[in-house]
Image 1: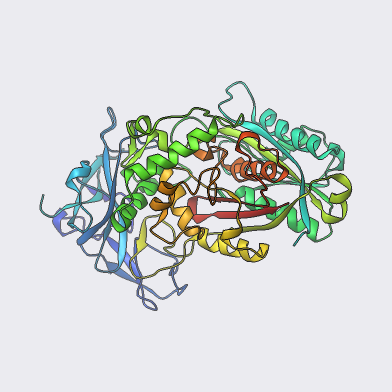
Image 2: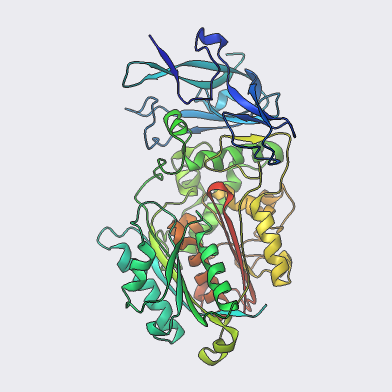
Length: 142
Length: 383
């Protein structure tokens, strides 16, 4: 089964094995800001001196919410019926707070500051039959 | 500073109008403003149209204006998300200050369908596919963090919604005009934890319009010119504002949020401070956002917004009444018309025309909106 990333430049290559894939991004050599995915220039200081970066797979939960209202547009998660979706911000050691889906949708199981780990797995199959890989974060203890 | 005045204000009720075209909705607001100004449509020399959504066709603004008569004046559209009305005001003010016209129309119109906004033109494809494409999730992420940092509670959120729903009863131009108990609000369905249905606004349909006039002609045309003392547009600096369509924020860089920046600039332009504001219309897309704006605009220190809603300081009769129109929670949000709707309401306040929610002796009024990409507008009016 062939695999593709949900978006070019978001995941490292190769896309195998799953537990070795990481979030990909870039780092500004002038000011040190790190970004998920590609950037034209540094959004913080304006420098065009960016280098590729691999983001940590561990972080801490900075904030969270759970979406209960059915999502609109081409959402690829469970939607008939819609399953509530946990969304969080995970702070990585690189100093960025990434918006991410969560592995749990129970607000009682989430606590700001808890350690979180990256999960990369097939999310849906595209029109060509490829497994499309997406990311989420989940509590380390779970 | 007293260079440009509002001499006419008009509005079309915000709500759902399945049987009305955007042209009818917009043109009614404009006609009301023109009549309120005591002028004729042919006296208007230029026009700026705030239309922020993708739901209306190209040239929506000009099509609405020309329904009143094809006088050949230049009418152009303004797209700056929630700040569109403020940017359109800026254009009108600059046109008058430059001397190129004396009388200018600024209006906004929108016709957004029911439910959560269509994410397709607003977010990246991967964000939508993964489920990170709903505006309320951003507001809720901020609320949860604020609760953690400052002890803000779900009851504080409900109190904001309770206040705004209560005032909406007096606003015939609001979509929802019903008061709710705190209990009804706290038992309403959850949209994005911890934000509930009765604490959130509805994107909808509506229009608002003002006639701007040079100081030279304002005094001959009206007894009660309302001066635009300041209008500011800014966008969020890097990592300054957690809002659609963000993918991340920074833990290393701290920049001031756009409402604080726009507010400060507006206060400076108007020669006042937050303590001089007699009434404020703020962006309560959801109850929590109103609380943050108290802090961002300098009504209270950061972290104390919960204490402020508890104390009643933002009620009619309090130190700084907020959202006496019922706010976005009651009016709904036709984006392009939203800031101008606030400006129309504040114009009525400063003329003494606000009826049951009149702030006695109102002299200085503030209107603020903020949205996608931190597009923020702040306008200060004086009488």
